[in-house]
Length: 215
Image 1 (cartoon, rainbow, N blue to C red):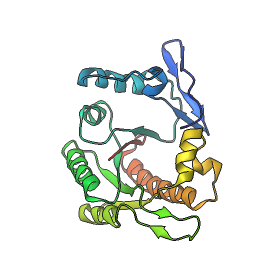
Image 2 (image 1 turned 45 degrees about the horizontal axis):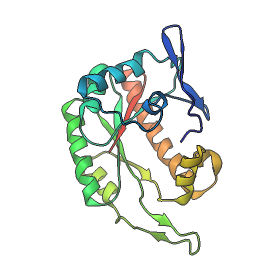
Image 3 (image 1 turned 90 degrees about the vertical axis):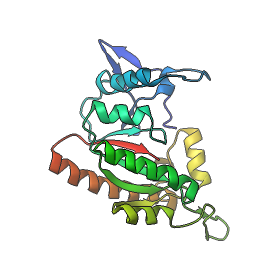
């Protein structure tokens, strides 16, 4: 999705992260080549997260963002145990079946002492290219209602878009490939809202922002 899937190199005792669009990144997919499934139990997942945090040469960072699988499993708990996480961002779609999982994730982060910085509503609507109307395929208002319920910031709505899908397949994020599009602006506005929350939290805690993204 970032357009750079070369295998990472090891220099000394550190793994060099890949880089694209001025973003350094590391993924299990870069290490596990091909179509083999990663079938790991909790201790192995814990060790992997620890390795990505400590053994990757991140150098100076503005933000360290961890994209997590949805749910309330071992990966989320391991991250909370290994480092002082600045906050979590919950990603949902508007319909109830997704909101149910996000409510559980919120309660989990409350139990482990990780503040929720906000909620993003993904696939919020489809913007028709012919009629320019918004079609709310998965319902409407679910993410905003959840943010109000938990008194957290609603960071924004991300549309369901062919352009976003194509950019992911081609390795050209829409904010780079079509920065003036409505879809790109939706991402930019959500990122700006999140950056505001991160800055306030980091100033209070005086620590590197480490974010968990999970639905």
